[in-house]
Image 1 (cartoon, rainbow, N blue to C red):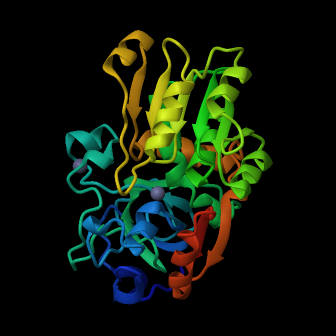
Image 2: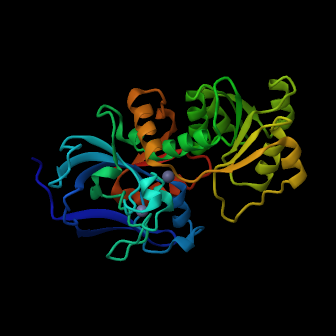
Image 3: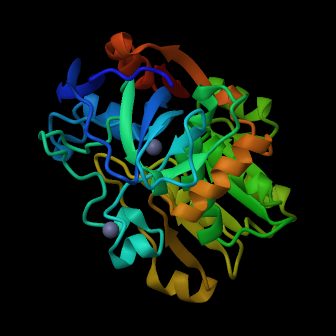
Length: 348
Ligand SMILES: [Zn+2]
Ligand SMILES: [Zn+2]
């Protein structure tokens, strides 16, 4: 068996614009825990916006990193379904016992992103060489998958959750507003559900990426995107719209793209400062529209994301923007915060 060090090295955010690598003792494994040698952890908006100082309500020091993947090196006495050598995606860890956890909705658990006993906000320790997690929050993933791609397990699971909430059906037309990493990941999930996907975007490099991934893409800077959607749907409009950029104008535009009756409107992202959604109540009535939100994912969505990545049904390789090491986290955050960046991956 691999020899296991006593200390783990991890990166945390100590204040706006400052990330530090620190050491702490690796927590003792309880009987249901696994020790994971981390392979990669990708930087989410939750992380880089904290680095930018846009989400300071999250608190410092913050040991985030929830888009992680690694290899199990040691298991607790009662772990039955995992063994050393297994490659896993790290899911959300809640208390495991409350009503929310028992429905797989860990995001609603009081312990979700709980501060660690040694005072680290979020307490995820994903940007680390080693980390300890309960076996019930791990999901097996194909060993041959590049770790930076396997680290898409969590964000992809979020998009699969959104697809289920929006009850996406085959052959429907779904519009995704925004071709950033989450927009295109949503688009890929809807395509896997059998829908026809149209992406709208303003930034040229992102328009290129969307086309490269094979989506019908509208340049909403040069074209009237609402009219373009009408034209592409025989005047009907979209069956559903996912707004993947939290922006008041995007909400307004997305709403206008919906078909006359029975459309679904998904608010996918949070924005800081918070955008407005200005929709008339009468309009919701006449349109029989559903306004939906999604946040995070459930255990079932993690399972689905692990399968989608392991089988290659969803290919996220174009979305890996750059790779950095733990000691280069400052540069990595700066890269992740650039408006044109896709996912920045920390290879551990
Ligand atoms: Zn994330
Ligand atoms: Zn719980």
